[in-house]
Amino acid sequence: MDRSRKTKIVCTIGPVVESRDMLEKLIDAGMDVARLNFSHGDHDRHRRIFEDIRELSEEKDRDVAILCDIQGPKIRTGKMVEPFVVNTDDEVRVTTEDIPGTNERFTIHYPQLLTDLEEGDEIFQNDGIVKLRVMERDETDLICTVRSGG
Image 1 (cartoon, rainbow, N blue to C red):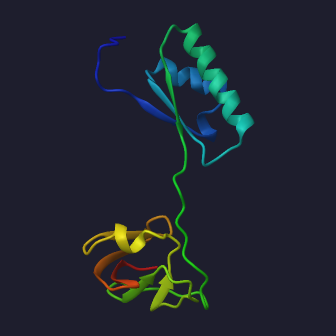
Image 2 (image 1 turned 120 degrees about the vertical axis):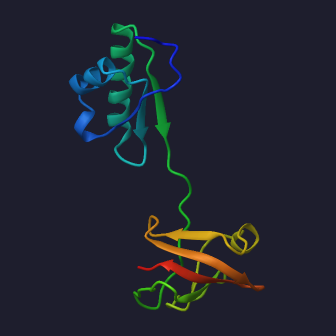
């Protein structure tokens, strides 16, 4: 195999390919980087996979990097009065004030919210399902338009 190539093959290791046999097949197929998603699984599972990759890499005289992908901070909304849906093109106000949330105004627990976001920026909620675009701001709130509801 030509080790001078600039493109690398990165494989996310999940339940379907975490067995030693499957890891070996991935290495044989050219895997350069094994990505372990630390948002899923436990330490023992990751340790076993890590050790299998290291052993197989040595046996096959292949340099296989291991990328340990950790989750970034989760920014949460505050308590809601009741469950609700926001629809595309609705206007909502997002605040750092600790209030009971409604479909018109709710809290996001991120102290720098008002200073970090500007008009035109987007806020992604619920793993990106709900998208808000900041239209304007005042002293306490970001006034947003719902770009994708949920």
